[in-house]
Length: 285
Ligand code: DHB
Ligand code: FE
Image (cartoon, rainbow, N blue to C red):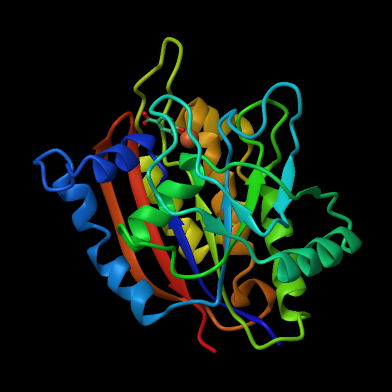
């Protein structure tokens, strides 16, 4: 059977992608950000999955106000990088895992989550920046990726509790797949940031660090945090953090297994308009 072996959490700041693509990672502003991922790049090489289930949000690239799926699973064979603002990033195309993705869609929909199935879409910085942070600049990404897009851009957005329950359904779906695949689930976006309005530039390091503490040790309690608290404490774009609860909900302890091992924790301010947060949690198998 397939297994979820680890979860990775990371911010997706678009300017990080530009810093990588333009060779600026060693500049004084960026160096401390990338240093926080040195461990992670080695860890991913040592713990290479067969498939990454990558929870992210699209920023009006593949979707727009014309069509707003709350939860969309990519069942395609491949996805081209695209982006708003700086244009498509010069990164490898993303190879999908259609068979496993179709199985997860079937299982999760049968568990009463109404996913949108997407066979064709481009992927923006929400998906490619986490891959770049964890993999550097390879010729090809190390394994197939199932893109899982969550609407955290246009209200109404899903609650943390809904996302946490969805993660549990994804875990059951993966574990009912009849091939011995090593699957990682990544939750991306965040941390506190607000890109618009009177509070533009908001960063709340104390709240972010409490979020990291609770994501590790009290995910069930954390899943009950309301939208209004995310917006008040972490800014309008801080709501991206509900995506981390999908990945956390897929970990073994939530289904009665042992607590995960914290392999890595990193936090840095600033990167563009946000705080960068990053965790790696391993399931003990
Ligand atoms: C920034 C952060 C984001 O999450 C995003 O989607 C766009 C911009 C920023 O910090 O500039
Ligand atoms: Fe974003």
